[in-house]
Image (tube, rainbow, N blue to C red; front, side, top):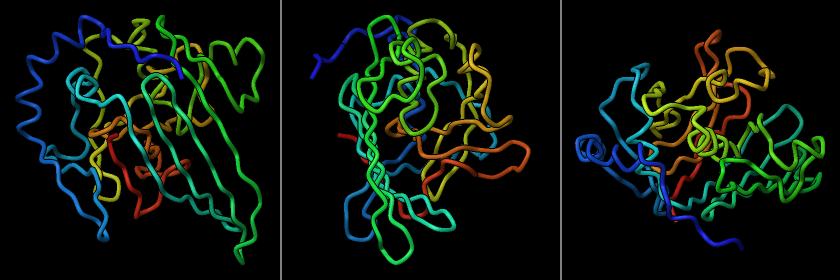
Length: 224
């Protein structure tokens, strides 16, 4: 395991001055189904434009997310975790009738210069595995932090507040996050937990709904 990086960009440190006001609007609650859950209630209206800096500054250095994503013939049981600069994903695929279809393991590490390096499960080119400019999906908090370190996302960058199954999220424009990597689906933006920074789903502007790689109701999102 690589040592954790404690140095933060200057604009993140400066944003802490406005964090107290932001935190006053957030209440951490949570026992869901008898288990402790890190869930946030925010009075910010869905669809509001919000600053990313104070949100990112408050993200912990670790999280654990569990949930499912259902398809017509199978269900994906998803575990997404962060430990410092290491981001890991396990997807256990189960067919109808509870027949196992296999387990997928993926891992990336965020480098000090903002590069995102695959350390497990990479199916892209050798160059992209060393530094992936188009990382999308459940590991993509690494892409947000990398874009900040590289200056791709500016200090005044904003996102859109939304709520997914009771979990406040901030959705970031895919075009702003990946200016050098064409989108797989136009108008599909990644949405990150405001409390932990974990990717929880994707918002489709054309459909005005959460679609695609999005966790189903009952997900658990916890800092660690």
